[in-house]
Image (cartoon, rainbow, N blue to C red; front, side, top):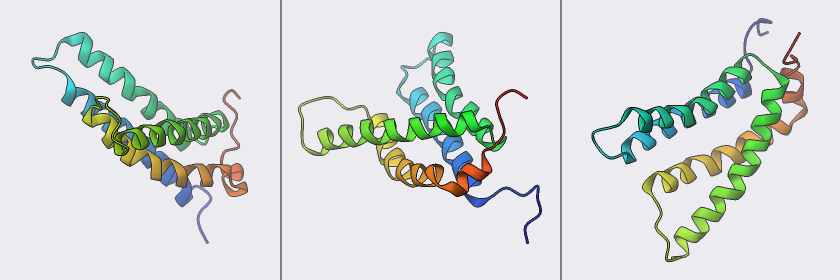
Length: 133
């Protein structure tokens, strides 16, 4: 039997997904910046990745609001990145940055699996902590 303070596997997977997504966002954003990096461009890249890290932190602390945000994010990511992959693989005459294709390949399967978990009653029992209180 698991100890009461242990974290369920689904919670660990959700936190790991958003932490890796944050690292991926930061690395790909910095990779695409022209060298030498300017402070504000690097700051913007860090700011874009901060969302993922904050969401991973909120999920780790089992905040119910973060579960809702993660559900909305997964649904939006699935729709957006499937459309991007369809356009890219369909040969649409558009320029696709490598970061967009790489993130699509990571986000789509991960978001589908994570969305299914976050909707489950088991996840509802995990994320019971209110934002304030």
